[in-house]
Length: 222
Image 1 (spheres, rainbow, N blue to C red):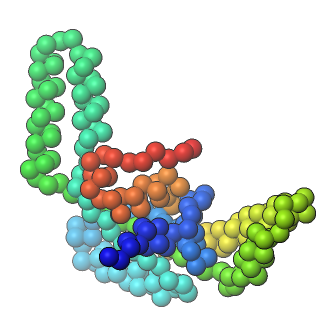
Image 2: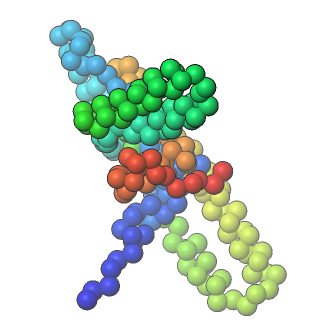
């Protein structure tokens, strides 16, 4: 029987730091959540203007941009927990009955109607012109050196170099982010970058959709 492949090998994400995804190939990503646009409610002239402006925006880009939508069943468990907590602290019998009935109504209505939430995201990529293979090789060599102050100093220098490179790449990545944000703002679509905790929740939900809909989410260290 073939040995199952660890899930880590199927995920291209190496780490999430300061709201930036670092992939295993050395490239970086920023994920932004986008506001919705009621396109169908616009007049024909407004729709034509939006389409034309969006075409201008796409033609102005000199780098790729990915957009995707996520649909999942509405999770009302946190709201119901708030109501149950209020019910437990309620002393008025009439209010307790009304609150209890309201909880059951909301729960059954959402379950029977299969209400879905839709979120829209824009992913901005950045791949460094050169992936620093020399630094990778040098780090591999350091692992075979004996434990000595010189080695510790080199490892510290390596960490400083990596941090400086990350800051440089992040700066260039966010220059692209601003281009994308300004372009879509012209058609009244607002973009907000996700922070580290929001990114973890997003990808946890993508790989564990059933668990997130039940309100289960791993703790994130501050």
